[in-house]
Each structure stands twice: as structure tokens, then as C-alpha cells.
Amino acid sequence: MADAVTNVETRLRDCGLRPTRQRVALADLLFAKGDRHLTVEELHEEASLAGVPVSLATVYNTLHQFTEAGLIRVLAVESARTYFDTNVSDHHHFFVEGRNEVLDIPVSNLQIDNIPEPPEGMEIAHVDVIIRLREKQR
Amino acid sequence: MADAVTNVETRLRDCGLRPTRQRVALADLLFAKGDRHLTVEELHEEASLAGVPVSLATVYNTLHQFTEAGLIRVLAVESARTYFDTNVSDHHHFFVEGRNEVLDIPVSNLQIDNIPEPPEGMEIAHVDVIIRLREKQR
DNA sequence: CTGTGTGCAAACTCTTTGCATAAGT
DNA sequence: ACTTATGCAAAGAGTTTGCACACAG
Image (cartoon, rainbow over all chains, first blue to last red; front, side, top):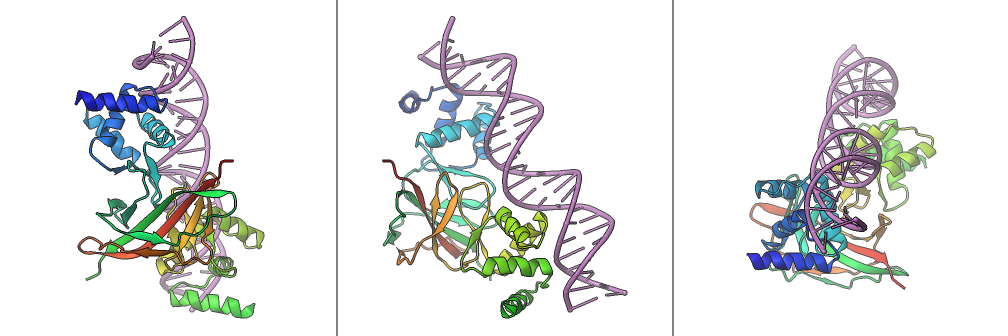
């Protein structure tokens, strides 16, 4: 796994971020297991369990820095908590109401057609499709 | 406008909500001008300007009651504030990053194909497409 | 009258900030 | 050494809650 760590360090450096212990640890957790969507709280918890006691404020800072660097992005759900997504490409999500749970949409050929022109002077940064789910009534 | 007020009252009653002064006033503001997306703060401000000094807590309560009744819905954006949309049908939005502004997507024939099957026991409550905009770099 | 709704202020949750300490280069 | 990052605790923003008073039916 030394390689993985090295890659993370390089990746951080390329973004102009010093590969500190905390940032490397958080990046490892974020990127080691494929695409993830996590809240600050969740990542903080994971870091603690992994034996890297990072402060909450640092998790906030770090995730925002990663977001600015384009490594991760913020997910648009109407929950109180902010979800960060390690997959920055245009892709889509299920969001389970009530449970406040985000699920990846599996191998989807979901397609959006006729995306409208943005207003003058604006360009499209990202397209999000959120399919909101509820528990089926019997 | 007496008719409009009557309609609002009936509408509230049909949802099992007593048409109180505050609820009627808020519903009027919400539904008088076509589709809107407002924050609690904004609606509160409007009510005050309209000469109906409603408390913030009541605006929160009322908007949630309206949401439960299906009159309005919560909009999924990753902003700190919650946006409520008076249009409860599946339709779509521009969201201007930085400015935290929600725009309706104009007369769009935007179309989504191959919507994936929801997981076992779940059904689709709503589909949201959010096209995130940024100011175009010169 | 009786039950609901409203207003206020306090409580809560998530997030940000200020500043002293620690770590990276 | 010099600069940037971290941690802590306090502050901030948005939202919710508890309870006394007011209003609708």
C-alpha cells in the first residue's frame, strides 16, 4: 500500500496542498474504496476508527480544500448535512427520503436530452440528477 | 381578489389546515405569482412587507405543513438554506453557484431516458435535475 | 367553549472562525 | 527558520421546540 500512499501524496501536491498526515489519511479513506458519499461526521468517525484522530474542524477544512481542488464535490440534497462525493463526473443518485441516505445509481444508461441553454454569461458547471425514493406503501 | 382568497381558504381546508390569517397570507404570497422558490427568510420578509407580521417560527411551521400537504415541496440544493418550490411536479432548475440563486429552467423539453429501477421496496417519489451554473470566465 | 395555531425565546445541529500550537519543506 | 496546517473552543447560521396566549370553528 506504500504505492497508494505515494499516489495520494503526489495528488495532493499537484493541487498545491501539502500532504500532511491528516490530509493523506482523509484522502486515503475517501479514495481507497471507489466512489463514496460521506458527511463530515462520517469521515471524522472513520478517521478516528482508523487510528488517525483528526479534529472535526480539520475534516471540514480538508473537504472544502479537496472540493476547491476538484478532487471531490458537494452533492445537492436537501438534507441538513452536506454530502461530499468522491466521483466528480456528471453522474446520478438515489436519495432515500426519511433515511437521508445517498445511493449510487447502478450501471445506468440514464440519459438527459435537450439540456437547455444557460442564461447569458453563464456556463454549466455540473448536471445533477437526484431520484428521490420513498419506501413503497403496502 | 376576494375569489383568490376564497380559493386559498378552500385549498387549505381541503388539506385539513385551518385557514388562519397567517396561513392564508403565506399561501397567497406563495401562489399568487406563479411558480416560485423561496427560503423561509424571504417569505418572512415578504409577509412583513405585505403588512402581515408573521413570526419566523410560524413560517417554518407553515411551510412544512404545506410540504406535508403536497402544496409545495423542498428543493434539493446544497445551500445552507432550504428552498421551497411552489411547483410540485417533476421539473428542473438552474442553480447559480456562489450566488445561491435558483432559476426555473425555461420552456424546456429536457428529457430523461432510461430511469433506472429503484431498489426493492422503494418507489420513486420525485426526479430532480439540477443544472449547476457558474459565471463564464472571460 | 374547545382544540389548534401562533409567537417568543431558548435549545439544537451543522458549520465556520480566531488564535495558539504543531508540523511540513 | 519560515510558512502553512491543525486543534480547540467559541461564535454563527439556520432550524426546531416548549409553553403561554390568541384565534377559528
